[in-house]
Image (cartoon, rainbow, N blue to C red; front, side, top):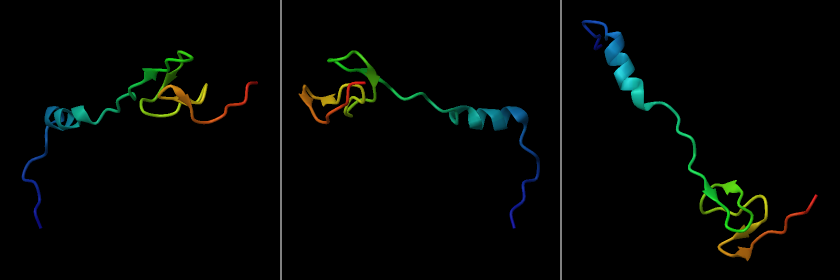
Length: 60
């Protein structure tokens, strides 16, 4: 069984983990209601996508 001869230093461990941080999702702005939403998805606020109404949203 393979066992490391020496322990990894803190710097080497932290350098390896430097890319593990989570990124925030990229948001786009709805052209109809100016609400931030995920790109290529129906706007949850107004129900429009690509200039047409896809789902009906109840106005409260």
